[in-house]
Image 1 (cartoon, one colour):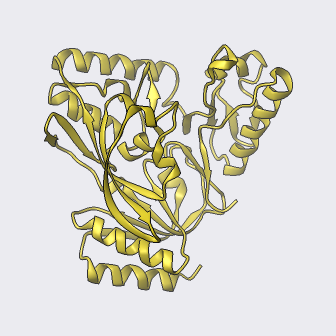
Image 2 (cartoon, one colour):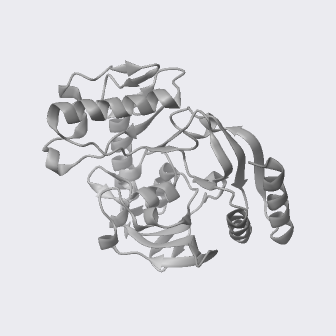
Length: 317
């Protein structure tokens, strides 16, 4: 991959579409994921100001013309980046965020790089309820929408109104605003997973609520996550999707097979939860992938269940 060509493209995009960005070359991806693993990205671009969407559209179009791959990074909370890193350009959305409440016709709007927990707090401060279930969850709004994040009996699709995206149409990238419907989503599945797109903004349909009650529920959820050990080690939360056909949670199935504490390299099935893999110190991405595949094989051999990974393996494997 030509770093010189990438730099030329970015420089030209900035000339045509002035905006504030931070630019990194040969950037360690372990610094950008909750697993704290992964090699270097050829180039990482982080928007930090307005004007980014026009810059991004031109960047995507030019990268597409030059056949330079582009990866969109949210909070890095559900991915494992290869030890070899990521070729091409990483667009890091974490600088594209909100710190204050923005509303429009009964909806609260967030830029996609806004941290999920921050969004829940901003909504709570505005006495708007509906995002409490996301309290304490790592990652960004864009990632939560893309994954249809689900926990504590609720999912993003329950409260999602519209989503603004940059999407590829007829070999060109354009901005579109999509009014979403719950029927277009499924368990940890969104229609955006089938699109070549970047989520820019999302609007949520929330209800008026009591501020104290909202924050009390959020605190309960955070305490529950803490008790379950979600913050004790670098990890990405649940490794495998649950499946109602299994009759019980995947974590319980893995536990019943005696796999808690099972370890490859410095990647370990969490002693406190069968469906979480933790980085005990200096795990390699390869350790996590091999352990994930080994767990899935052991479950299939013992129970006949085919586990579907929830974490996504990205980069050059």
